[in-house]
Length: 93
Image (cartoon, rainbow, N blue to C red; front, side, top):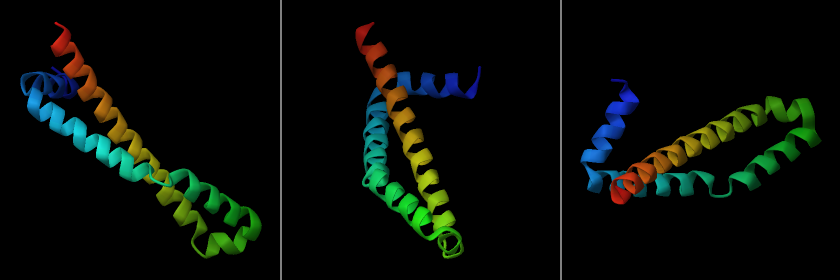
């Protein structure tokens, strides 16, 4: 049995914990995506206007941190969707 199957099996057996995890994942997704588009566009404008100087001043590091934040937000969203699917399947059976 793979880790994913084991995790989803655990979620199926513990519906209340699954719902709690779904709520936490939703909150994490919301917090991580708050103003993300605005920050990425501001960073892109900074890099475009100031070029090499902006890269030296930390613009590339900031862009990498924003991409990491977006990846973490997507992981939280995927966890939310997994919990949602498990709960929907268990309620509709």
